[in-house]
Amino acid sequence: MKVIDHLKGSSETLFSFEILPPLKGANIQSIFNGIDPLMEFKPKFINVTYHREEYLYKEKENGLLEKISIRKRPGTVGICAAIMNKYHIDAVPHLICGGFSNEETENALIDLNFLGIDNVLALRGDPIKTESSFKPHLDGHSYASELINQISEMNSGNYLIDDVKMEGTNFCVGAAGYPEKHFESMNMETDLMYLKKKVDAGAEYIVTQMFFDNNKYFSFVEACKKIGINVPIIPGLKPIKTMNHISFLPKFFHIDFPEDLSKELLKCKTNNEVEKVGEEWGIEQSKELMKKKVPCIHYYTMSNSLSVKTIANEIF
Ligand code: FAD
Image (cartoon, rainbow, N blue to C red):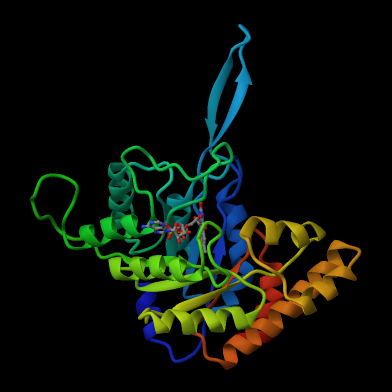
């Protein structure tokens, strides 16, 4: 079933979450171990992130450097199929522009279609570590809106070959939104303009970057409405768990902690204390979002579902 149909078919706030494929070499059970504790909250869909290759330079015997490509977390499509098979819950693979030619994208979508997966979250992807800015594949997409266009074309039966109409796919496409602005955008206005482009290209709903100040989400939803973005906007929440998150999350995701939260975090001396603050904050955020009847709350587990379980216990 499509995410948009889940959203439209419910008068109550839905529960969903996102998982990361395990590091290469780990088995599928490690994924199920993260999902099982959250099943009691009846997730309607589970997102699976996509992780691009990274490049390492290894010195060869002759002293020259060899460029080696590695993917630490492969397996998005296989994990989605395993989730659908085991739990009979819709899986939403993330599909990115980075590293993909248009033809590889088409082939990935054909595979998903054959597997009965009819949802994708379409993203551009971040620059890889060795790039100072995002570099698209020579035959690939530069922006998520172009990827969404390609999926919409496939939904209409227009594949990359010739001018022949084929049987259309039936993907429901989601896109990313940034209540605190995407870090490369000149300002909020241009970011919203490009977000609208993704919706006009066919995105049927938006999932937000994590935020810790609900007012930023509420303002974002208002600003979207003002420029004619009328699709559901799903808030994304991340429970802070470790001392390391205190600096890592703002730096990596380009988000701010509100003052009340930072005051509490400053008092913490251990990971356990941070985890408690993160859970309490997540509960309060979720309660307020529920009160405002948001369509769904989407939790970023980042491979650790226990804090999400603690929050969901209080909310769902
Ligand atoms: P875009 O919508 O293409 O926007 C990228 C930037 O370009 C923005 O600044 C935008 O304003 C600007 N822009 C857009 N269109 C144009 C245009 N036509 N001309 C000029 N500028 C333009 N990354 C992963 O690698 N894997 C994942 O699984 C993943 N999952 C994510 C899930 C969510 C919910 C979110 C919020 C992010 C996720 N990301 C993931 C991160 C995401 O790939 C990065 O934030 C990336 O930098 C931007 O992706 P996007 O799809 O928002 O890009």
